[in-house]
Each structure stands twice: as structure tokens, then as C-alpha cells.
Image (tube, rainbow, N blue to C red; front, side, top):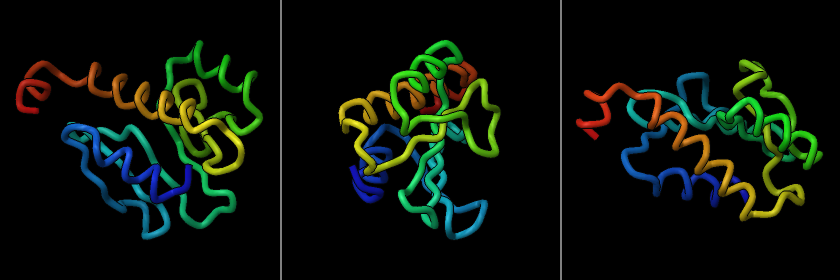
Length: 115
């Protein structure tokens, strides 16, 4: 998966917005006003930060060398994942889905209702 495919996959999820609040080199994807993915465009290979259940985060870091603790994020709840560096696309999609689902579940009932 390349950065453009990653971007399209995120944007095809319901109620996702995209922005660049940290500068033009970082794409931020939100649902309900909360971040679920960040993509750094100035790195090679490109990397994404994805929210993750703490136990699963550790498991994924052990399983894949392309997954490490979240850079500039809470390392317990975020992973940094290399995009386009050999990680199976299906696995990356699962990580995006998991991050999105975690954030949606954390939204208040009022916000979820508005979505």
C-alpha cells in the first residue's frame, strides 16, 4: 500500500475528515473530531501513526519489524507503521480499521448520534 492508497482507504470510512494541523507534511485523519491516523509525508518509507489497543500494539510490534511504538505519541496506545515496506496490505487495512473503530467507540453517545 502506498500513501495515496492509505489516504483513500481512510477517507472512504464514514464521517472521516482530513487536515494538516501540524503542517503540510503530516496528514491527519479524524472521525468525530478525534484523530485515528496521522501520515508523515516527509519520511521514506512513509509512516503512519495508528491508535491501537495496548495489548495488540505489543503483539503487532513483536510480529512485524515495520511496526514500532508511536513516534511523538503515547507509545502505549499508538503504533508507528511503515507504509509500503513489506507489511501485508491486508494487515495494514486491519490496523486502520482497528484504529478507526477504537476512536468511534470512544466518542460520546451524543457525537456518535450526530454521525
